Image 1 (tube, rainbow, N blue to C red):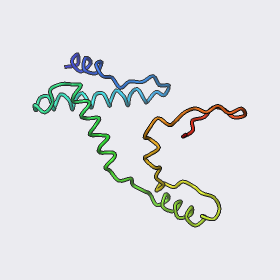
Image 2: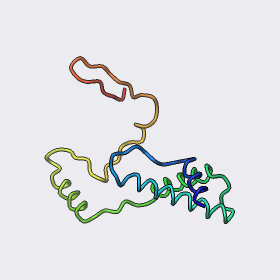
Image 3: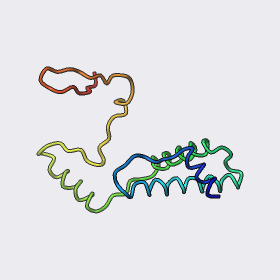
Image 4: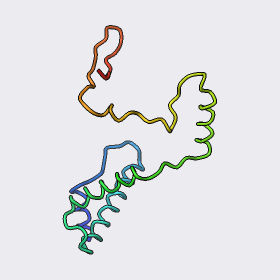
Length: 124
């Protein structure tokens, strides 16, 4: 039992090098939860391969997070109202601000050298 769990954990580990004491514990718990769910799915004949199970799990978690609505607290709503009242001062990005998707398309992000500034990425 324990040897199989350690073996499965070693195949696709989520461990990262970190300096905080609680983070490795979190990753160990995450690995254990993923392996336990894989073993349950394997026993129920839902999943056969470990790698395929993890890929499906990742895709489902990403899809679920994209579909879920963001919860807002009262303090966030108050901050948005304050920003809307002060429209005459200066432009501020709120939680409702959406960047255009076209910024992700194409290979138009090139570093431009400026004499007085550090190099930065600009859309050409």
